[in-house]
Image 1 (tube, one colour):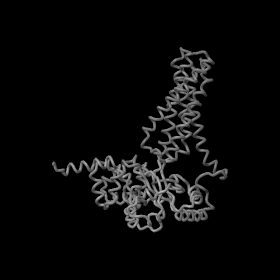
Image 2 (tube, helix red, strand yellow):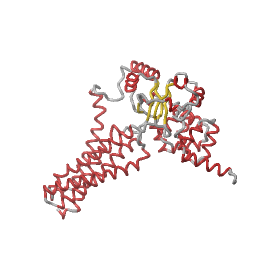
Image 3 (cartoon, helix red, strand yellow):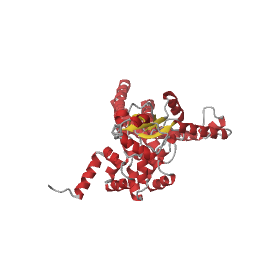
Image 4 (tube, helix red, strand yellow):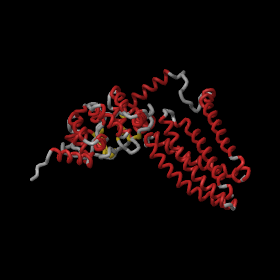
Length: 435
């Protein structure tokens, strides 16, 4: 019988980790941090990332702190930003900042965004020093982990599947009374309540009150477990904030409220209104470039609002979806190219469908095939541009460190008006002989 060589053994080890990362991560967590480090360094980076994203944040943070800077950079450049932020949150602040400075700019921006949720959100309140328990773990292994963590206040353990998706929960008293070879899956029951990362403290307080729970798991948009909010922590944070509110009652809020002073509201709104006025003049200037074309065919002036309106609505749809994705951390600025491709295709197919309907209506009204061709082709072009702009503007503002919610719509209105007018009147000028 042929003897297995060390090289063959390493290849088999890599193949197992690549095809069964969940099982591999479970086995790794039983080893010392030093042994985990050595094994993860031996793996190709793409295989290692699969395992890193399945390790408990506490274990992963301990191992990461033992890595050399080159390895840390490779890991954080490729890891999922939400899990990367959870991992970094489990590290001391000095380590966190040091590691962020190692990462390439696009990945660093995504990690910083994932770390910068609103102070009022579940992410800002939760504890990230959690361990991932799976249904296949035995009571014996679970008790060893709990003994090592030394957290007497824990009453519930939350179970995840191989992709870190929250699946069930187990009460500590059931674990204490069970046979040591019993699987956690046999003791589990459905999760009573959970919150998304962006949930406010008011939402969390309502859920705590309604379900009478002491611990609330926090999940991302894919229902991956990223932390746990404990009832006493929420109460302490709320008390600290109330104290701060009392100290600053005589100050002016940083953001406008429904009943803010008129002078404050005017001061906040006026600059953007002036910018909007400037962009309106820009759109008017584009129309002025084609004054002779409009004078020759007055029907173009009648149809201008149709093109501008459709491109504006298309851009607003893309803007709303992108803003929601950025707010919920479903997408990241470094994914801009994928986002633009998707919106370009969406804009094209929507534009094609709208162009057919518009051309039919224009033909019934004008009996001019040339005018139908002009408005149909300009509709497709302007809706594609509007859809891509609606996605790119908030991403670009985010990369520049600005709040996309404050100014995206103004810039989008400018782009959709200018490009809508330019495409329609430009094509009309080229094809004026067909009208």
